[in-house]
Image (cartoon, rainbow, N blue to C red; front, side):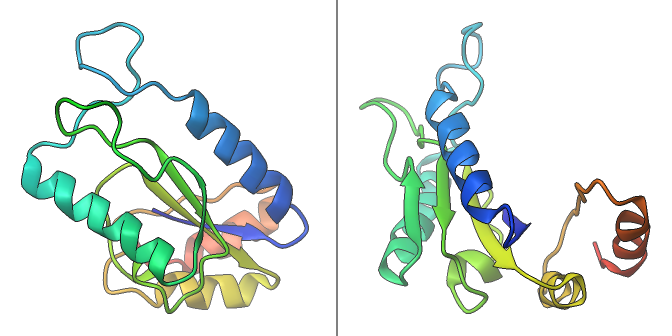
Length: 143
């Protein structure tokens, strides 16, 4: 998942996202303490792990997770990448796994353009204290 975060709060947001990901418990679906289950099969597990490796090799900074969770099943640690650029595979393709790609922006118009520059875009959400910005973005994001 791509998460566009304004430059003014980027570092603080990345730190908070990484801390939350490290707390997130992966485990069997019927375990009450589990917050995240396994990938559906080895094929999907391998795809997600491939995206994680691709993110690392293309220069994104893995600030949380990035590895298999445990030694049984198809569990992936909740993973957070920072310093993600638009050209990176993890910013251009849907991963369908517990991976967040946090992308820095400075200008709302540029963030909208970059968010819409995807052949996917299955969903979008906006978090802001400025209702005018939220309404503008909601009207311009293509999801």
